[in-house]
Image 1 (cartoon, helix red, strand yellow):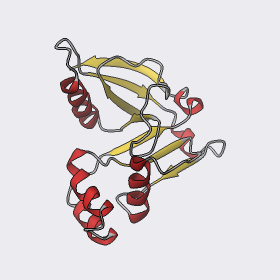
Image 2: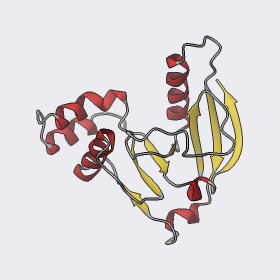
Image 3: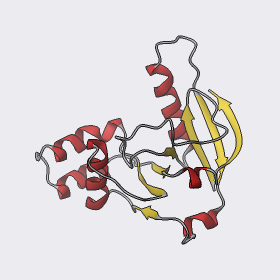
Image 4: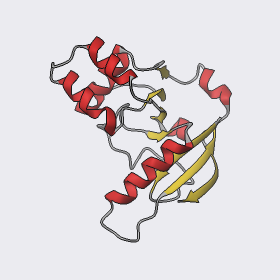
Length: 162
């Protein structure tokens, strides 16, 4: 499986040590199967930098598909925008969730979706209404490597400066 990570630097050896905790799936190294999504994220990160010399970089990795079914790892999968996924994302973003997952896969709750998630979080929308609104958006996937053990399974292929 080919995976992409958008950043302002080349990442040859993925690590969870520099990741933030209040994200969709908690502290982890985030990748996607969509090069387009990784490029978008790299550009967002570049634009957030105050340094005018910042770069937008996509690091490319291979992951052996058999890892996704390896029972040695705790793997959580969300098949699309579901109420379970929505509750998990909201809980993680609040910092309320602690989990022992090695790898989590599911949709990205990006900035376009944040308004809907906020309405759900504040009780303006119920779960069903929020999911319906979220399904109106193109949902990219993300794979969050939440332990160093699974990060080490990613094989660096190349990096591309945009």
